[in-house]
Length: 406
Ligand code: HEM
Image 1: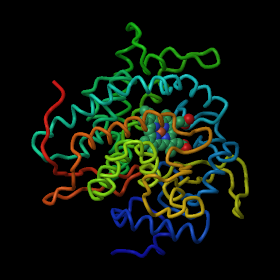
Image 2 (image 1 turned 30 degrees about the vertical axis):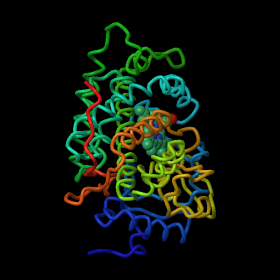
Image 3 (image 1 turned 180 degrees about the vertical axis):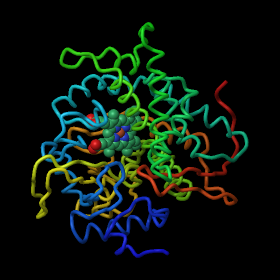
């Protein structure tokens, strides 16, 4: 039975089938934002709290939470001595979290990203070549494969052949139908990364992220082997579905809005701003939790230690108080301080890479198949019950072109 936005707003459950309709989900967020800065959910993603969780939905409060790590900790058990998930950059607080970032940061530097641009172009062209001569193809295949190939081949140091398995395991781990499926997929992904990192031990260095994690020292001590594996696994999870979902949304939007597609072709300088707007508008991630470490009051609500608060970046990114005409995708939007990459100490480490993959992904498609449009005979498939939301298929038709890679 379909429920109203008001009913959903009382107990937000991102896995509900009604949210396969993306516009409906944003209607629910509008109701949640209008009522209060904080909503509730009994079924939080990614936070194991039997009592449910708060959901921060307005821009201002989300920013405040993200900037106040002393009260709103990224550690799911801030009171415990041991980290449940190991020493993982995304579930640590400063100062140790900042030391982890220092280890990984050089791999995402603007200079390193700039040098990667030609390679990303070639990898994207190769994927387009798979269907360019036929005049029809699936742009979700480009969106889902390009970020994995680029990350595994040029940064992480894992075989490209592993990408499909890692995408599948990551997807099931986050979005699988039952807890049992999700746990089995986490286990499978961990084992896969464990085997890959084990195989690299004692081998000559290759200047990739697995090497960096294996040789890193924090406070004079090497990382525990399990933490090397967990952080490699985090990078795989953080880097694949996020970019793929956002890019798949952009392809769908342009395939269904030909005037916007042509505008980007006529004015390629718009691409940088358009990518930011797609990341704001498409909301590839709909929430990451914080745990209250010490009692704190925010906008009239008192949060007690141990409570979970989900920061809903997607809802915040449609807040009219921050973004005029927030419900419209405005490709040349200015002053776009969106939260798509988070904010504060945990702000996305891979944002420069994601932006580059996204820009090149759009640029190659717009250049090589400028008249692409959604296929009139097959349906686009949206995956709407997940932490990362995007299209699983974007079938398009276009004037056939020539292959450009060998
Ligand atoms: C469009 C694509 C992407 C989006 C929307 C995105 C979004 C985010 C967000 C919202 C956070 C903050 C999490 C928090 O507040 O706890 C984050 C953190 C992170 N992201 Fe991304 N991300 C993207 C791409 C990537 C890529 C390509 C990588 C690396 C390959 C990456 C690696 C990370 C890491 C390691 C963190 C944790 C940083 C920390 O805890 O200090 N992300 N990302």
